[in-house]
Length: 259
Image: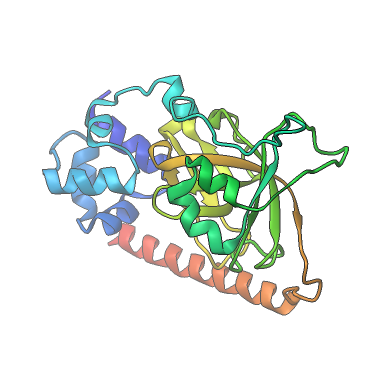
């Protein structure tokens, strides 16, 4: 495949028109069209911008280098660091509170750091004892109705290709640290996972496998403040604002294509 084909595939995987891609790159739609038709080749600065936008390397964009199954699944990375009950010989469930989330990005592979975090056992029949689990405290309103301060119970995902679309996960990423989102698995298409907020005022974004460090499948959550519930008015208003933004974006796109 050529650069033109790779560029077109990346753009379509994002669901963007040529005009939308051009806007993000700061170039004209005609330039994007010439690149996708093979009539011109982008300069190095534009290639760098494209690679950053699509969360891939310049080599893979130009040459279409295939990634190994180990890279796509995350199995090429380190062995997961876990805390173990020395008496029972079982793994403990580690808790990552909000105040420790920033340090987790730098200490996820440090056994001393992991063992210093709160730990407990989870003897509930719904949770298989042989699975590795971690509990993350979330903050913010991007995943309403799960409110800020709640704790999400999650199990370790060894093979990222098994991520299920529209289900909830905690991701540890190089850029943003710990994030709690709904996933859309596009690893087979472009090596990316789209992260989607349940609160519609937040826009989805893509994370390439190169940026992923850990993935945890959410199995439940604990909410301590039972009065901390978003009102229906807030949710409806957020959805209306998101719909209005989409309508405006569609109008701009139509106007640009007509022009």
